Image 1 (tube, rainbow, N blue to C red):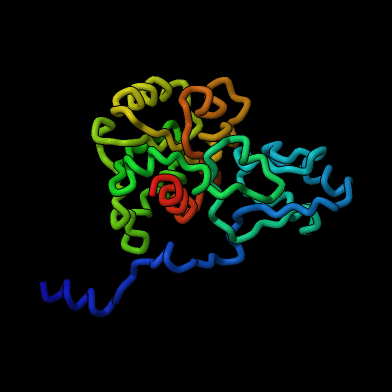
Image 2 (image 1 turned 180 degrees about the vertical axis):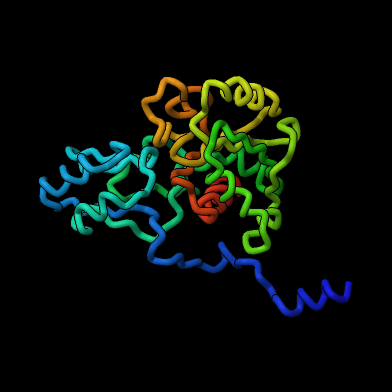
Length: 247
């Protein structure tokens, strides 16, 4: 006990004060993209041609963040003349179509379902399903339980059984082998319930898009309430999404 108290005294208070106080991420972090609508057509086309995810539409000059893996290729190709990535990590949406963006996003709180806030505002239990994920999205969800983020202080916890859950958090491209397990988990969650899609793989298939072995977007299988883009989404992106949509 003495050693525990000594360790606590030496380390001090480590928990972030977010969302009461803003957090500024390093410049190397790639968050919400900003698009220059006046960029030369040849630059826009070069970015679209170079995008490994075919996430850029050169005609309407928009980026599909559901497909984007935030690799930064478009920013490098355009030298910042068409796309630049900001440090804004608050990029989740309640509608999938809002992920196709010109750099602006709707306020998530304004699109949250009020009955979810009333039901889960004080206690939200989540069951995570890794549907053939690479463990990157899963790892950044696990980080939320560490003292810095301390997800439990908001009344949000990950539970072992879907029968104890209010919502499922799905990661991975949803392979054929995991489809049945995902559907069974969803059915086991008592109503009313929510579905949260985390990461480009879950939203669109990610790098595996086009493969017959996966579902290209969880919305083809289940009604999705919250879309969190990224590869993987930053822990703060997940935290902001949970708090804005349910609290």
